[in-house]
Image (tube, rainbow, N blue to C red; front, side, top):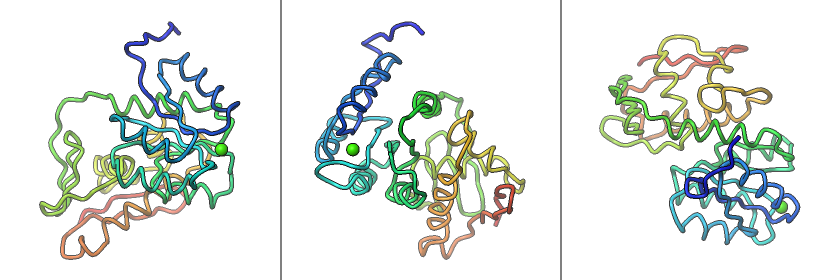
Amino acid sequence: MNPPDRATARCLPVVEDDETIGRHLDTGLRGNGYAPTRSRTGSGALAEAARSVHDVLLLDLGLPDMDGLDVARTLRARFPDLLIVILTARTDDIDVIAGLDAGADDYLVKPFSLLLARLRAHMRRRTITSPPREPIRLGDLVVDVTARRCTLHEHEVRLRPKEFELPAVLARHAGEAVSRETLMAEVWDENWFGSTKTLDVTMAALRRRLTGPVAQPYRVPRVTTLRGHGYRLELP
Ligand code: CA
């Protein structure tokens, strides 16, 4: 790969208090076209995130001043469009699920051999400039892929980045079975292998939003789970 051009390097906040891991990340990211800015504390991370608009932020969970989950929650509330990728040494399911529930979009278990590939996949999805497409109507729910808006009878439904991409993919195949592998590949990473927990958690969050009190009076599509295969979006 050619050395990255500093002027076009993509600013990437990294929140990591461990010096060895932090340096390793800095070097790896700089060599691959990113301009990482490192914070060593949760409060530093919140300040850095507010300094300018970022696409993605990498977040360690074990920080000296705050619980990383609280940092994720605060970032999610303040920056709905920020992709939050948790860097964790914790591999227990419960921690990963807690991280995703706190608002993260993806997680990577240290030592991050997949980090660069996953980041490229996230970035590619962000920078795809596709021609404008007609909004998809599903009963009273409208998914406008071009504007990245989801509305329910004129009311905007606030969705996190991956919660938006899930119905956008399912809607393109409304009424058809879509496999877990297809969803992981289209919404997260085309080279996905391994756990698909992140899909389950994101789907659960999406369902809560589509069945909550706000949605009650309207005709909304239902997502049916197909055991051992995937999901199907049912038109209302
Ligand atoms: Ca740490």
